[in-house]
Length: 178
Image: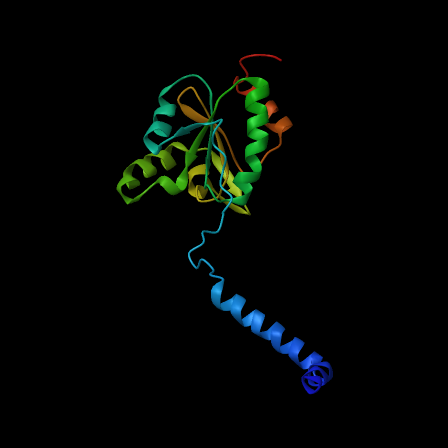
């Protein structure tokens, strides 16, 4: 028995390393990892917006009252960053923000998409390229103000609450004062 104690005492470090290695091997064998774990991707928070389809967005051009329409992509970081400013302006000044999710448009809606793009007819320059606002629709977020059945303002990119307020006042979107 003395020989065994002396052996373990002299080889303690080796047995400790072996025990740790065995533990690591057992943990890797018996702990399962989900290969199909979904990666959480940030998405546009539209709960305070009037979410519209492409057909409903086209109908917004049939009214005289001013409309604040944002077209975006649900995973676009610029659109996601724009949302809090829109939510603050919407709550503070009482006008609805309509939101069109561009990724929801499929091949069967090409004719309606072309009609929508044709209605976005104000002159616009983006990164040195000139054209009609609708020519750049793949750029998000896009802010479109519609009044008297036509586009009266358009901007690609995010804006802060003060800029949104200025535009809303200019185009008659603010319906109450706080």
